[in-house]
Image 1: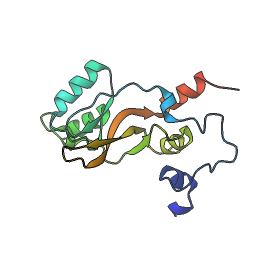
Image 2: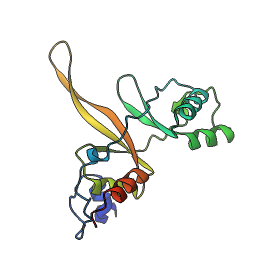
Image 3: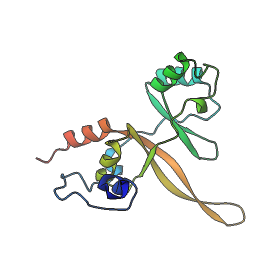
Image 4: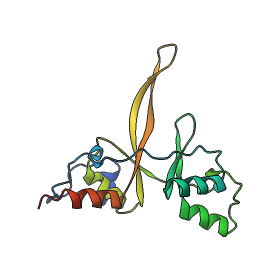
Length: 165
């Protein structure tokens, strides 16, 4: 059962500090990774245009976010090309046809330990920052802003550059 799996419990915020012998970086916050701002795609971008944009800018993945700020999923070059070549999507289709809509999110204040647990199963995590917004009548709501995309390579690079041992 997933409720007996400590890594699942950490990933879903049910447990903290499970690992007895934590590495030096375990409790450092995600914000210390110094991630660059991601390239964001709107849902109406075509697969062809998305491929061109990602190749031109040197990215292999990008979050797809609605104008409202809702995170719809992640587009990757490999998944887009695989879908088009297999005939499951056309170059003219919107990117929403080929995005991964199952993805994990981490906040800037989450620990690298939590991120590490997520990256054991996922290729990436979307780093979000919650922001309070107010509308004209004074009511407020919380909106998640995409702050970055983090991969296992980002974590490994941070750990190897800052190794305290």
